Image (cartoon, rainbow, N blue to C red):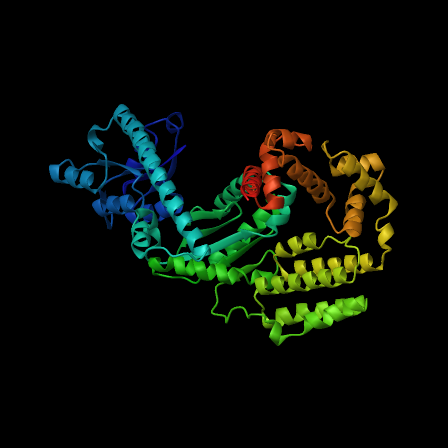
Length: 530
């Protein structure tokens, strides 16, 4: 319904106008009756009426200036003047200020007021549609520039200036704060919900808009489907922190997903918004040590420290411990690495690369000894690369070291237990069928959760990952045949949805089926030419 505010310093006039029409039948509701300009401006800023009926002779307030302020705040808001003044200059001044209709109190009729309201609704819809289209265009540019900043790519100063000149940013010229948000552990979520990307964004948009108070002026810009920035009109730090905590609580409760937020300091230079965004992105990396579901504020900290092999010897000691099969010492050294990283605030990427370096060396050393490789190191490395917090990395590496210990202690000729061996054989022989965890659990009479955990413990792989891996490697073999269509290859390994098959293939091999086939054909052509 359209929100209507009536402004007049005479109570009788306010009441008469209120009871002149059946507002509900016009899809309108009387939001407030204001007796002066100051009260009207306060209500306007808090509740944003879409139609305002006002006199121009307001107590202690210039009615023309009141209309100008309203139109400056919201050009879509429609103003109807109803006044005793009927001189040419009053009418001209009101219309020039932004009113679209001027009615006289002494001749006001129900029908003329109804027609004015209908026209006001039509004008509001038209203005709002134009404004929304403009805001969408500006939002697209803002998102594009934020992505460039995120990837540390330059933006021409003149282009930034043109964007920020838009009236969309008028509420933020005096003072603003920028907020960056990102859903935590999103990679794990996407692994289980492959088609959830757009759905996540839609839910986040709804939760953000419903959690932010109506009196807040803000612009939301999604960087990805699970992250983005919010530009808030200047407000007190405590108030914004309270709003952000509410956002985090509502999103976590409704979507069952933790979310972390980083808040900037108050700023009055709009042209610095992109530099502030870059600083927020860097600060948000501290979530690696703070943990998931964190609310952080932009600080002037020294930042992360780098990690160089020349300065530490953890890797040498840990490799020696693996070499002599002392896994208690391996775990002790691992805890030392975690403690060192936290105390020295090591850059997360440096730490992840260091842990991958250690795993690669363990794999290489054992292969050089002639040990049969039954542990899937690459799967572990992929999991490390997806770690978002130190706690997550710590737990994952302990799990990996436990599996490595079991692998090195096991008899290589009898790597897996009977149940897992049967499941592996079943997958090998039935890769053309759709295979799910529930189906395997039912077929082999094992609890789903226990089966998943047991398979991971023994093979080092997630069961569904293993199934998909087998299917993808077979599909890659099939695609080597130039006469087989991609759709046929997908169907041959149990996928009816070619779009999903393409996404999965690219996830495993970092190349689409079409590009893979093109490379194979080019390679064969090159071999023939040679």
